[in-house]
Structures are given as C-alpha cells and as structure tokens.
Amino acid sequence: MTYTADIKKLPRHFLPADFMVKDWATLEPYFENLAERNIRSVKDLEQWLKDSSELEAAISEDACWRQIKMTCDTENKELEAAFNFFMMEIQPKVQPYADKLNRKLTGSPFTKELDQQKFFTYLRNVKKSIDLFREANIPLQAEMNVEAQRFGMIAGKMTVNVQGQEYTLQQAAKFLEDPDRNLREEVYRKISERRLQDKAELNDLYTSLLRKRHQIALNADFANYRDFRFVELGRFDYAKEDCYQFHEAVKLHVMPLVNQLYEDKKKKLGLDTLRPWDIEAEPAGTEPLHPFKTGEELIQKTIECFNQLRPFFGDCLKKMKSMGHLDLESRKGKAPGGYNCPLAETGAPFIFMNAAGQLDDVTTMVHEGGHAIQSFLTHDEELNGFKEYPTEIAEVASMSMELFSMDHWKVFFDNDEELVRAKEQQLERVITIFPWIATIDKFQHWVYEHPEHTLEQRADNWMKILGEFSSPVIDFSGLDEYRRYGWQRQLHLYEVPFYYIEYGIAQLGAIGLWKQYKQNPEAAINNYITALDLGGTRTLPQLFRAAGLQFNFSSDYISSLMLFVKQELNSLKKN
Image (cartoon, rainbow, N blue to C red; front, top):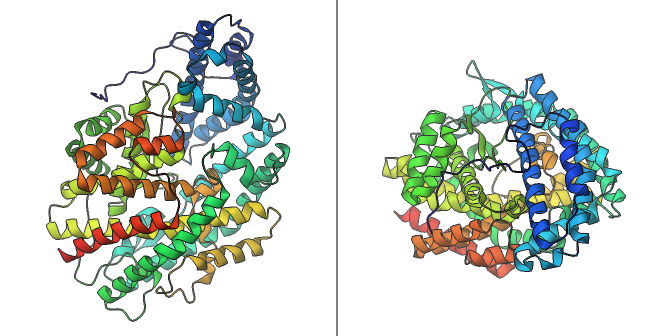
C-alpha cells in the first residue's frame, strides 16, 4: 500500500466551511440538530455519526490550537484568556450534549446493525463515557483543566544564570555534559535551587488538583481517583495489579543493569564517587555531543534521517514544516516539555519541544516525529473516534522511532566515534528510563490511594519510592532537599495524571519492534505501519499483535528484552 503525506483538511458537509468556534451560542444549534434528528435506518445512523464526528473534529482542533498557542507563549494573557474561555465557557456546555448524543447512539435500534468488529472499540468507549458522566463533575473538570495549565506557566518562567548569561532550565541542562566537574555541580545546584523557589506554589497547585480529582471520583461512585482514571483512560486490557507487577520487574531485572551502567560511568570518568551531576558527563578531553545548532538544522537533519527509513516518514515532517506546525527551540516564557498535538480536521499535527542542541533533543524530535506519523496514517479514518488510538500504542509509535532511527544518525554525527557514543547514550537511556517510569507510576498510586495526605507525608513517601528505584552507585548525600521535591518537575503529574506507565509498556513494545528491525528492517517497519494505520479500531492487545508484538508484562518477558538491549549495548562498546 502507498502512503502519502499530502493530506487535505477534512471537507465539511454538516458545518459551514468557514465556521469558527467563537462561543456556545454559535455551537448549540448543531448539537440541537444532532440531538433532535430522527434516525429511521442504519443509513441515517451512519450519516448522523459522520455529522457528529465532523462537529467533534472542529471543536477538538479549535481547543488544540488554543492550547498550542498558549504553551508557545505562556506570558501572553490574551492566549491564556482564549484557552480559559474555552475550558470554562464552552467545554462545560458541550459535555451534557455529548452525553445526550452518546445515549442516543447506544439507544438506537440500528446501532446493532453497524459493523460490530469495526465499531467494537468505538462503542466500548461511548459506553464508558456514559458510565462516567456526572453533571456534578462538569464544573470541577473545567476548573481542573484550567488549573493544570498553571504548571507550564510556573515552569516556563524558570531561568538560571550561568557564566553571566541567562538560560531556561532546558538550555542550562547542556552544562551537565561539560567535562568541567565544578561547572556541572554549580549548574546542577542552580537548577535545583531554582526549582525549590517555587516548591510551595507547585505543592499547593498539586494539592488543589488532587482534591478536585478525588471529588470527581467520588461523584462518579469510585473509591478513589486512580480507579476512576483507569476507566477514563480506557485501560480495558490491564489493571493496577499489572502495574505493580511492572514495578517489581523493574527492581528485579532492570536495576542490576542500571547499577552496572553507573559503575561503568564512574570508572570511565575516573571517579571515586559518582554524583548526580556526573551522570551525563564525558571524560576530560571529550567534547559533549553537538548534533545540531538551530531548530532549522534539527528539522532538516531529522527529515533526512526519516527519508532514509522510509520516504513517507520524511514527507510527513516536510508537510508539517511547510504548514508552520513546528516550534522546536527553547526560550523564556515557553512551557517546558515536548508534545505532538494531533489536529483532527487538518490532519498534519503540531510538534512542540524545547531544543537546546543536545542528543536528548534529537531523541525528542524523532520521538514526536513517530507520533506525527501516526497522526498522518489515521487521518483518513471515517470517524474522529476511530482515530482515538490507545496511548500505549501511541507511545510505541514514538519510542520505536527513537530506536529505528539510530541506524541513520550519521546525518547528525559525521564522526564515527561520536555516532557510537550517541547510540550508546540512547541505549543506556532505554534502560535507565524504566526506574523513573516505575517511580512516577508508583508515586501516583500512593498519592490517589491516600488523598488526605499531608505535604510532609507526600515528600516522605516520594523519597521512600524514589529510594526503591535509585541506584546505590550514585552518591546523593547532602541533596535530600532537592530530591524531596523532584517529582515537581514531572509535567504529567499535573496535566495528565496516571499517564506514565504507558511509556514503560510502550518501551517494551518498541524494544520488541527494534528486535524485529535488527533481523529484517523492511518487515519491522511494515509491521509498525500496519499497527499504527489501524488507529483506535482494535483493542490494545490486537494492536500489539498487528505489530508482531506480545502484550506482556511478565517478569520473564521484561528480562528477555533487557538482555537483548544489554547485548546490543555491549556490541557497540566493543566497536
């Protein structure tokens, strides 16, 4: 099958071509039409679904643009007001109608005449939304959506001064790779001290969000927000017990590898004691990796890299670049982090990140590029709901691209020695990311199981969990105050609660696909595309199977994948 990045904005048939979401008064007539329309046949129902999907796509894209613009410039009050207006004045009025339309769909006698295989996951999500809907939660969810964005505004203002120049925290992180150990320690402490300045505000923000989330769960007849959120996220195919199993497997099979990596690092740097500011460093005389200088250079090199994997992949990034759907470089006033934001009508998504010229930025770019490819592949799905793929497979899309692309990183590193170093660092990160995923996920389970906890209990339990997944090879002495608030740097805790175990599940899938790739690159990429092209029309285990993968959390399976990564890393080190 031939895939093309030359996608077109979805044509409108139900809404006027020039319709824009301005306020509720302009939207309501279209919801009324759908709510009151008579459905006399399965053909009527299919047209009703298409019209509903068109309205949903228009609203979704409008909301996405409001968020994109605000995160690109957190200091612009007009952009903040536009986002807040949508969340407080439009979204709360959409929700009761969405529930009414969901009930109209499930109550229609013609719904059973739809293709049940094609509509299985779609209807399952609709029923889930009906089960969770409570009028009392509408204002709470609106307040929560607005409040969560404050994290980006607080973090976006954080800067430090290094060698007489102001840097965002993302930009300053490059000094942690510097051969000068004193400079590394100075920058590590400056970044940590800067975060501590806002610890009280970030704690208060998190507490406020927790209270709202817990009340939402109680309103929906759940014991806690964790149980509510598992249903809301559509985790139909695994449970909290599987997460616990994952945490234990990380301790058993990943931590020994992490410890060995840090022992090797200590030896390589010639240090008696490995400190946290040494983790990213290279030995004296070894220059840090500089894969690119500007955002323009980053995108051009990534396009070239993707072209070598599959021309369609490069074309997707070219299309986004031509549309102005990229904001890559770090700057003051920009929200932290990185994301790929699907745009339901346009099809070509938007990539946002904070590049500062490091290898991590290359990884982020190809990661978000993997998400973007999935957005392109699913654009032609008949209904917007068919594009709502599980987040776990979305992260397989991105994390697999990190590993696939390594074979073509020569575009970033024309020096063979630097290329090997870059690959080594990437594979080390594949291993060392698991403990952090387990830490964040386990912390969230504790937080929402104990919603009435005090700030001191929060910090104490964070430190306890952090200790379970911290390497004893690293000396953290004297740094407890920084570490007690280390969770505050994780955006997901504020903006997308419980979205983090997905990275662990997906990393297992990505390693599995990379294992296929090492044996047969063409077949592996075909499996990758086949799975992503299905969008949300299959269950999560079915999507994994479509990619030729096991959906497996078992200790033995995780151990086998870790062994494969370690073998690949060892073979690089021998070269």
